[in-house]
Amino acid sequence: MKKLWTDLHSNIHHNQMDELDKWTEHAKEVLDFWPIAYYPFQMIKTESGAGLEDLCPEEEIKKDWEIVRGKVKEENANGYPMFMGYEWQGCGFDGDHNVFFLDNEQDMKHPMRYQELRDDYKDTEAIGIPHHVAYQLGSRGKNWATHDENFSPFAEIYSSHGCSENDTGGMDMERHLHMGPRTGETCYERGLEAGLHVGCIASGDNHNVPAACDHGTMCVLAEDASKAAIWAGMKARHVYGVSRSRMEIDFTADDKMMGDVIAPGKHNMKISICAADAIDRVELLKNNVLEEMIVHSWENKKIADDEVIRVKFTVEFGWGPNPRFYKDMLVKEWDGSLNVEGKLLSIDKEWNSYGQKLYDVTDDSCKFHMTTYMSTTTGHWMGPSTVVKEGFVFEVEGTPDSDVCLKVDNYEYHFTIRELMKTSRIKAQYQESIDLANRVYGKVDHYRDDFYWHNAYKTRIRQAVPQDAYVLNYEKEIDMEAGANYRLRVWLKNGDVAWVSPIFVEK
Image (cartoon, rainbow, N blue to C red; front, top):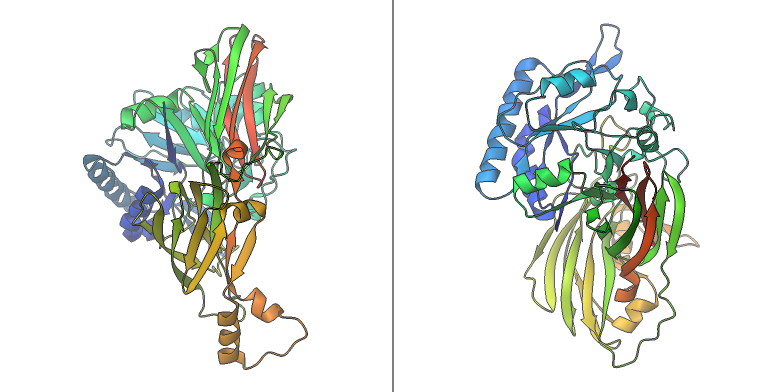
């Protein structure tokens, strides 16, 4: 099975339609396929000035929908898999859902209730995927009592809103405070407890750029990269989600995989993971309860001086001048390269916005152009979080003393692989911050260097980890109980998480 990545929740608005080409080109840089989710809503005011979210005028929606249709058809013809989709909210009693279609010929419908929506597309290859499910029932939280697992084979349980898996985990839902805190009454676990066969993913709920790495993405396991195969994978619940960095995950029981239904009894369970950073632990959950914790230990393995090893490390760019002090310094462009005395095996893009470019990639080097932003719109309706970093995960091969050269703007940094494995480090453009302060404020005298350090652009090189750290293979026989469901939660040392759709057992 191919592992294909996407952001299933990129909401482009009416006033952003002139950016559709820009959105699409960015999606093509970071996603294997893209189901666009047009957002047909706007803010309106009552005569007294109260702000309400409601549908855009019908003529605007229809015009935009045809633009989306044309773009999707164009990209499909050029070989890039795109799906038409839109966000449906109804009266709020059943929760918000994104509706997607296999073909490109459907109309957009806006009934008040979820079951009406399902019935409107009963003769159509359509799916309706619930998101931010753990908000209040009746106020756009998920109503599992009306759920149809055939129309909605999985749910989005992590996004920019936070985590809807349950109401007990550490990843709360605090970004969109106007929607209230999360509640356990509507969370993903309640759907599983109701006996529903529903998988789980993560995706961004992004309204300004598709596929922001920090807001989560999803993976579908498909036989190939065609729209038909991708659609079959999604319908079969062969999906999982990650909170940030990508992980390649296989979770099987005999010949069944995540999302499948299996007969009760003894089965050979296999877990295979290749992550972007060190794996800390894997939690096997049975009916939402921790059944087994697989602790991943690798730190004590010795590496010989002449041993050829593989390591991964993340490099991030950003931070920089505070907009309170430097209102005209909201955008920074970076140019750099990586050269390895050995092999450059792979590069993962951890991008959050536009303006990123990776080019001239060879067996031992690459070049990049990055753009970082300091946003001042945090907290606005559908506004972005402050974006302060962009990055890459590099996988390299060499001996412990092989040289790795990172060039960033006018700076050149050299490390051995051994040094990269020792610790993380920060390289700041410190003198540039001093020069900027002198130009704007004159000399800033203080007994601490806060004003210079806080406003300096920084490059963070995270600690490198060997292949034994980011690869895990586990196998055991497991007696799977009738009517139960078994799923995985994967934790990395850096705090990243993956949620894997359950394997369901027949009753």
